[in-house]
Length: 218
Image (tube, rainbow, N blue to C red; front, side):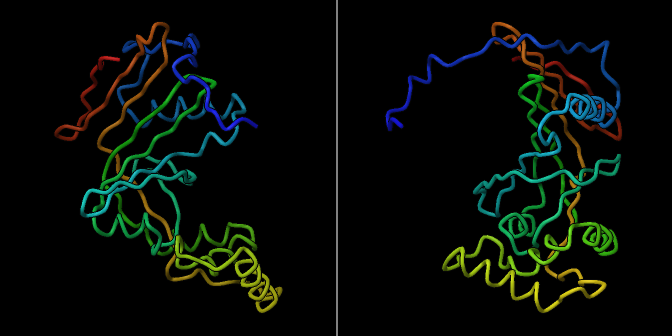
Protein backbone atom coordinates (compact mmCIF):
# COMPACT_ATOMS: atom_id res chain seq x y z
CA UNK A 1 0.00 0.00 0.00
CA UNK A 2 1.38 3.38 -0.97
CA UNK A 3 2.04 5.92 1.76
CA UNK A 4 1.58 8.74 -0.76
CA UNK A 5 -1.90 10.24 -0.72
CA UNK A 6 -3.67 10.86 -3.99
CA UNK A 7 -4.34 14.34 -5.25
CA UNK A 8 -7.55 15.00 -3.32
CA UNK A 9 -8.40 17.96 -5.52
CA UNK A 10 -9.23 15.48 -8.29
CA UNK A 11 -11.72 13.46 -6.23
CA UNK A 12 -15.27 14.66 -6.69
CA UNK A 13 -18.80 13.51 -7.49
CA UNK A 14 -21.80 15.16 -9.08
CA UNK A 15 -24.83 15.07 -6.77
CA UNK A 16 -27.93 14.19 -8.76
CA UNK A 17 -30.10 12.02 -6.48
CA UNK A 18 -32.80 14.50 -5.57
CA UNK A 19 -34.13 17.99 -4.93
CA UNK A 20 -35.43 19.86 -1.89
CA UNK A 21 -38.22 22.39 -2.40
CA UNK A 22 -40.14 24.45 0.13
CA UNK A 23 -43.47 23.31 -1.34
CA UNK A 24 -42.61 19.68 -0.65
CA UNK A 25 -41.51 19.85 2.99
CA UNK A 26 -43.39 19.74 6.27
CA UNK A 27 -43.82 22.88 8.37
CA UNK A 28 -42.72 20.72 11.32
CA UNK A 29 -38.99 19.92 11.20
CA UNK A 30 -39.38 16.78 13.30
CA UNK A 31 -41.90 15.42 10.80
CA UNK A 32 -39.52 16.34 7.98
CA UNK A 33 -36.70 14.53 9.78
CA UNK A 34 -38.84 11.42 10.21
CA UNK A 35 -39.73 11.52 6.50
CA UNK A 36 -36.06 11.49 5.56
CA UNK A 37 -35.07 9.05 8.29
CA UNK A 38 -37.73 6.54 7.25
CA UNK A 39 -36.60 6.92 3.65
CA UNK A 40 -33.07 6.03 4.76
CA UNK A 41 -34.42 2.98 6.63
CA UNK A 42 -36.46 1.87 3.62
CA UNK A 43 -33.38 2.22 1.40
CA UNK A 44 -31.63 -0.40 3.57
CA UNK A 45 -28.68 1.88 4.24
CA UNK A 46 -26.01 0.59 6.62
CA UNK A 47 -26.89 1.89 10.10
CA UNK A 48 -28.81 5.01 9.06
CA UNK A 49 -29.37 5.68 12.78
CA UNK A 50 -25.70 6.58 13.31
CA UNK A 51 -25.05 10.26 13.91
CA UNK A 52 -22.12 12.50 14.70
CA UNK A 53 -22.45 14.20 18.07
CA UNK A 54 -20.48 17.43 18.52
CA UNK A 55 -19.94 18.85 22.01
CA UNK A 56 -17.61 21.47 23.46
CA UNK A 57 -16.26 22.07 26.93
CA UNK A 58 -16.38 25.32 28.88
CA UNK A 59 -13.25 26.55 27.06
CA UNK A 60 -14.92 25.99 23.70
CA UNK A 61 -12.71 23.05 22.73
CA UNK A 62 -14.82 20.79 20.48
CA UNK A 63 -15.10 17.02 20.50
CA UNK A 64 -17.01 14.94 17.97
CA UNK A 65 -17.80 11.24 17.76
CA UNK A 66 -20.27 8.82 16.20
CA UNK A 67 -23.12 7.57 18.40
CA UNK A 68 -26.42 5.77 17.83
CA UNK A 69 -29.82 7.45 17.79
CA UNK A 70 -31.94 5.57 20.32
CA UNK A 71 -35.11 7.65 20.38
CA UNK A 72 -36.69 10.31 18.18
CA UNK A 73 -39.83 12.11 19.33
CA UNK A 74 -41.12 15.66 19.35
CA UNK A 75 -39.46 15.94 22.77
CA UNK A 76 -36.01 15.34 21.29
CA UNK A 77 -33.35 12.92 20.11
CA UNK A 78 -31.95 10.35 22.54
CA UNK A 79 -28.55 8.69 22.92
CA UNK A 80 -26.91 6.75 25.74
CA UNK A 81 -23.41 6.82 27.17
CA UNK A 82 -21.18 6.79 30.22
CA UNK A 83 -21.78 10.03 32.14
CA UNK A 84 -18.03 10.18 32.88
CA UNK A 85 -17.12 10.05 29.17
CA UNK A 86 -15.75 13.08 27.34
CA UNK A 87 -19.21 13.81 25.98
CA UNK A 88 -20.68 13.59 29.48
CA UNK A 89 -18.01 15.91 30.89
CA UNK A 90 -18.55 18.40 28.05
CA UNK A 91 -22.32 18.42 28.53
CA UNK A 92 -21.93 19.02 32.27
CA UNK A 93 -19.98 22.20 31.44
CA UNK A 94 -21.80 23.26 28.27
CA UNK A 95 -25.23 21.72 27.60
CA UNK A 96 -25.44 22.74 23.93
CA UNK A 97 -24.62 20.23 21.20
CA UNK A 98 -25.27 19.34 17.58
CA UNK A 99 -26.15 16.13 15.77
CA UNK A 100 -25.29 15.35 12.16
CA UNK A 101 -26.88 12.58 10.11
CA UNK A 102 -25.19 11.87 6.77
CA UNK A 103 -26.63 9.45 4.22
CA UNK A 104 -24.19 9.58 1.28
CA UNK A 105 -26.06 7.25 -1.07
CA UNK A 106 -29.09 9.57 -0.78
CA UNK A 107 -26.83 12.66 -0.97
CA UNK A 108 -28.53 14.03 2.15
CA UNK A 109 -27.54 15.28 5.54
CA UNK A 110 -29.42 16.74 8.50
CA UNK A 111 -28.03 18.97 11.25
CA UNK A 112 -29.95 19.26 14.52
CA UNK A 113 -28.85 21.67 17.27
CA UNK A 114 -30.13 22.38 20.73
CA UNK A 115 -29.78 21.99 24.47
CA UNK A 116 -29.08 18.55 25.92
CA UNK A 117 -30.69 17.23 29.10
CA UNK A 118 -30.39 13.93 30.94
CA UNK A 119 -33.38 11.69 30.43
CA UNK A 120 -35.11 10.17 33.45
CA UNK A 121 -33.44 7.41 35.43
CA UNK A 122 -36.39 5.14 34.68
CA UNK A 123 -36.07 5.65 30.92
CA UNK A 124 -32.34 4.93 31.13
CA UNK A 125 -32.97 1.78 33.17
CA UNK A 126 -35.65 0.56 30.78
CA UNK A 127 -33.35 1.01 27.79
CA UNK A 128 -30.38 -0.57 29.58
CA UNK A 129 -32.35 -3.78 30.16
CA UNK A 130 -33.24 -3.96 26.46
CA UNK A 131 -29.56 -4.20 25.57
CA UNK A 132 -27.86 -7.56 24.97
CA UNK A 133 -26.42 -9.07 28.14
CA UNK A 134 -22.82 -8.67 27.03
CA UNK A 135 -23.44 -5.00 26.19
CA UNK A 136 -24.73 -4.51 29.73
CA UNK A 137 -21.53 -6.07 31.06
CA UNK A 138 -19.42 -3.86 28.78
CA UNK A 139 -21.11 -0.76 30.22
CA UNK A 140 -19.97 -1.81 33.71
CA UNK A 141 -16.32 -2.44 32.88
CA UNK A 142 -15.71 0.37 30.34
CA UNK A 143 -15.15 3.05 32.92
CA UNK A 144 -13.91 5.67 33.02
CA UNK A 145 -14.81 5.78 29.34
CA UNK A 146 -11.98 7.31 27.28
CA UNK A 147 -9.59 6.64 30.19
CA UNK A 148 -6.27 4.96 29.44
CA UNK A 149 -5.92 1.18 29.82
CA UNK A 150 -2.72 -0.83 29.63
CA UNK A 151 -3.79 -3.28 26.94
CA UNK A 152 -6.61 -4.95 25.03
CA UNK A 153 -5.92 -8.05 27.14
CA UNK A 154 -6.69 -6.19 30.37
CA UNK A 155 -10.00 -4.99 28.95
CA UNK A 156 -10.92 -8.51 27.84
CA UNK A 157 -9.93 -9.89 31.24
CA UNK A 158 -12.20 -7.42 33.04
CA UNK A 159 -15.04 -8.39 30.75
CA UNK A 160 -14.59 -12.12 31.30
CA UNK A 161 -14.26 -11.72 35.07
CA UNK A 162 -17.57 -9.87 35.34
CA UNK A 163 -19.18 -12.32 32.92
CA UNK A 164 -18.22 -15.19 35.21
CA UNK A 165 -19.18 -13.34 38.39
CA UNK A 166 -22.72 -12.44 37.33
CA UNK A 167 -23.35 -15.73 35.55
CA UNK A 168 -26.98 -16.23 34.62
CA UNK A 169 -28.49 -14.01 37.30
CA UNK A 170 -31.83 -12.59 36.23
CA UNK A 171 -30.88 -8.93 36.21
CA UNK A 172 -27.70 -6.91 36.05
CA UNK A 173 -28.35 -3.47 37.52
CA UNK A 174 -27.69 -0.40 35.40
CA UNK A 175 -24.51 1.36 36.50
CA UNK A 176 -25.14 4.73 38.16
CA UNK A 177 -22.60 6.33 35.82
CA UNK A 178 -24.44 5.26 32.66
CA UNK A 179 -27.62 6.62 31.10
CA UNK A 180 -29.34 8.67 28.46
CA UNK A 181 -29.34 12.20 27.13
CA UNK A 182 -31.91 14.00 25.01
CA UNK A 183 -31.15 16.84 22.60
CA UNK A 184 -34.06 19.31 22.59
CA UNK A 185 -33.91 20.77 19.10
CA UNK A 186 -34.16 24.49 18.36
CA UNK A 187 -32.49 24.42 14.93
CA UNK A 188 -32.49 22.03 11.96
CA UNK A 189 -30.83 22.17 8.58
CA UNK A 190 -31.71 19.81 5.73
CA UNK A 191 -29.17 19.48 2.92
CA UNK A 192 -29.73 17.81 -0.43
CA UNK A 193 -26.79 17.56 -2.81
CA UNK A 194 -27.36 19.09 -6.26
CA UNK A 195 -25.34 19.35 -9.49
CA UNK A 196 -22.65 22.03 -9.84
CA UNK A 197 -22.49 22.41 -6.04
CA UNK A 198 -25.75 24.39 -6.11
CA UNK A 199 -27.00 22.37 -3.17
CA UNK A 200 -30.43 22.76 -1.59
CA UNK A 201 -30.26 23.85 2.06
CA UNK A 202 -33.36 24.61 4.12
CA UNK A 203 -33.19 25.59 7.78
CA UNK A 204 -35.79 25.62 10.53
CA UNK A 205 -35.16 27.94 13.47
CA UNK A 206 -37.40 28.07 16.51
CA UNK A 207 -38.62 31.60 17.23
CA UNK A 208 -41.35 32.33 19.79
CA UNK A 209 -42.65 28.75 19.78
CA UNK A 210 -42.92 28.47 15.99
CA UNK A 211 -40.54 27.42 13.26
CA UNK A 212 -39.14 29.87 10.73
CA UNK A 213 -38.04 28.22 7.47
CA UNK A 214 -35.32 29.76 5.31
CA UNK A 215 -33.43 28.75 2.20
CA UNK A 216 -29.66 29.07 2.67
CA UNK A 217 -26.95 29.73 0.15
CA UNK A 218 -25.19 26.48 -0.83
